[in-house]
Structure formats: C-alpha cells, structure tokens
Amino acid sequence: MSPTDLRARDRAVVWHPATHFGDLEQNPPVPIASASGVWLKTPDGREILDAIGSWWTSIHGHGHPRIVAAVREQVGRLDHVMFAGFTHEPAVALAEALIAAAPRDDVREPSYAKVFYSDCGSASIEVALKLSYQRRVLCGQTDGRSGKRRFAALRNSYHGETLGALAVCGSPAWREPFGSLLHDALYLPAPSQADHAHADLASEHPEHRPELGADSPEADAAVAALEAHADELSALIVEPIIQCAGRMVMPGAGFYRRLAETCRACDIHLIADEIAVGFGRTGKLIASEWSGVVPDLMCLSKGLSGGVLPLAATLIRNGFEAPFHGSPSNTFAHSHTFTGNPVTCAAGLASLAVFAEERTLEGLPARIAHMERLRLQLTQRHAAVIESRQAGMVAALVVDRERGPADGRLGLALRRAAMDRGVLLRPLHDTIYWMPALNVGEAELERIAAVTSEVIDEVLGR
Image (cartoon, rainbow, N blue to C red; front, top):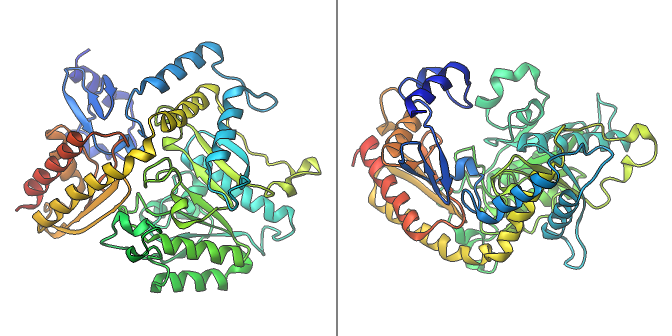
C-alpha cells in the first residue's frame, strides 16, 4: 500500500484530532510504518526525528525493547479482565510502585494509599474532580447548591477535553465552544517567567531563585482569591512547573508551593495535573517534587506507560478515602471498561523498570545542560526569538508573531517547514518547544536545534 493510497483512504473515513479539514489538502497526515528511539519511519523509508515525544508521551523512545517484551508477554498470558470484582498482578504491582515512588511528607511512610486507574489523562482529571466533590458531599460540606462545590484553576491552563476537565481549562479558546455545558470554575492568575532556566528549580542552589513566583503579584492575587472563596471551593487543580498546552508557560516552583500552602490552610483539596510533566520531563520523576508539594490527588498519564499504551492513574492521599466507607451509598460510582488493563499496567511497570535499570534520572542533568546550551545559542542568534525558557527536558522559544505569515497561521508554517526537514515540531502558535524522549542523544538534540534555527530563518526571516 503506497503512502498516497493510505492518505486517500484516511481522508475518506478518519476524523483527526486538533486538525481543521481545510488544512488537510496542503498538509495531509504523514503515514508512519514504524518507529524506533526518537525516529519515526514512513512506508517509503523516510526518517522523521520526533522532537516532541509524540505529544509528550514517549519517555524512553519508541519501541523500547524492555517495554515491548513486557507487553508481548502479558498479552499472551492475560489480555484483559474486568476490574470490578477481579484483580491481577500487573495492576497491583504498578499501584504499589507508584505509591512508593510518589512524593511524600515523611520519608518513612508513603503519603498515598490508593490508585484509581482510568484510560487517559482527561479521565484521570474527571476522577480527581469527582472524588473531591463526592468527598465534600459525604462530609456534609456541600448539598450540591451551596458550600464547597466549585473548583479553581489557573488561567492559561489545560487539563483535557472531556466536559469536567474542559471546565477547569483556564483558556477561553478551549472552553468557549462548549461554555453552556460546563460548570462554573474560578480562574486564578499565574505568573509567566519569560526567562525561566532549569536552575530556577534547584532548591539546592538558593542563588537561583528556588522561590521563583512565590512573591509575584499574580501569586498575591491568586492567594487572595483562594482565601476569599475558600467556603465554596472543593479543589484547586494545577499543572506543576509548566503549563504545557498553554504555550509552555513556567510560573515558578515557588508559586506552586505558595498555592499548595494556601490550599492546606483553607481546606481546599489540591489536584496536581502531572499528566504531561510527570515521569522525568522536568528532571525529577514527579514535577511536584521541585516544590516539595504532596498534593491530595495526583493525575498521571502520557508517560505512565512509557508512551506505549493508553493508561492513566489518579493517586489518592492516605486517609482521603475514609468517608467513602460505611454505607453502600458512599461508593464512588465511576468506572471505565478498560480500568486497570493488564497489558497497559505491564507496560507501566516496564517503564518504571527502565528508569531504574538505565538510571534515566541520573543521566538527565547532562542532557538538560546540553539542551540549555543549544537553546541559548538559538536565542542569541535569532532576533525573532523574544522569550526563551526551560525546565528539565522541556525547552520553549517564543518567536515574534508579527514577523509571521500574513494568514496568521504561524504555528502551521513552522510545523510544515520542520517536517520538510525531517523533524517533528508542533509549535503552539508562536511557541516552538522541544520535548523529546529522555534518552535522546546529543547528535539528535543538535539536529533538532539546527532544524529549529533553519525554520525560524525560513518563516520569520533573519
């Protein structure tokens, strides 16, 4: 089957995500036949360097042999069984491993007690929102009309596109088409550190502003809003360290820490959306570790399975589940058909094993530093780059949109120019970002940087 034939068949029957039908003529989907490491391969043998981890999922690269072997072995033994009334080793072992690896208040004892599995990031957010709300109901803190029944989120945030998750997305562009269907959330301001450097996260280096964002005007306003609305807020949801879909804005580890302290003082549950930033993306396994924060509910997905299969989990703090005991009417009535699927859980276990076996986190500082050198070189070279920031293995370059194409489709033009050169970039309008697999090689990072430089020249001018 030729790529041309596959595109024609695709156009006839498939509706692609985040894609306007009018763009498909000039930018048809690229057929991919195989993938290995950070490389995708088309049916005709062309190689494409995956600089964004296939939408932030690929942690150890495509086709990692450890994960592939685990999936093959598990699917041959137990492919699926309903998780209501049954259990199996992969789900239990993965839950144990996640609880052991999660941030904790006391090094001697885990802070989390339960793991609720679901199928995707948006679903894990829905689980967290519903758990928070139902706990308030069971504790007599809301009757559904008054009391602690609302949620707070940050402006510019993104948490998914199911209706509950969409309601706490802080960007009107996501919400407005479905506004009449959504619950009423409280949106808080967040700072944007235009020159955020990875060193800004490192609390062991106090000269590098570990409290970055904590004393900002936005933090003061956010805290004031939380305190003013504490009687009606069930939970605050936050993306720690990076607002990924929000053009990779980095508010500062101190800002997140201050919000967490306010939530604890005001009896507001803290939900951490670690879906995109977890599993090493920021240089630690869990991004909340940079701020010393242990949220009440923590949502994981994307890299949870190594980016191989759809899997999500919501981690629940020890004691949070107490009100759900007692009467059968206290049951959390939420389920997914493929909850705790054995094959996806086996992939998650294998991914965690790769972290240990390959000492992935220990190897990140050198890669982070190399990425930083490349990012700063680009920033200095191109006048069109007006902001440049980084946290861990996530780098972002904001370009001057006034230099962009007349039709306003800057992100599309940048993406197309990169694909012409065999690199997958998917800019967020004026923000070019890099988020490759954590084991990306130096030469591959340099290729990403070189193509980014060429693309800026082509689309925005020298």
